[in-house]
Image (cartoon, rainbow, N blue to C red):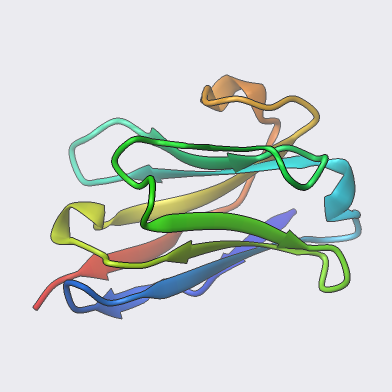
Length: 120
């Protein structure tokens, strides 16, 4: 089971940090990704971190604003989101698997999601 936390309401231009923690597993053995789904839209890729701990991928819409990382000691993956805009409003999902890429089908395990709302 993978559990996300850190969502909430933030004003445009603000920041949030999301966390994703596996239960009973070592995060260092997984590639981790974040996806998001806005109301009425399909789920879309946001960012991914290879299990090597340093290779990353980002969607063009978040590049330079979001950063994915991992802390093996805390056994937690993070998505730091800066300069948030209303279009970033969505449910954010953590995903994990042995493979790595932008496609949702590459990941076997999913969290239940955490709501991020960007509004003034």
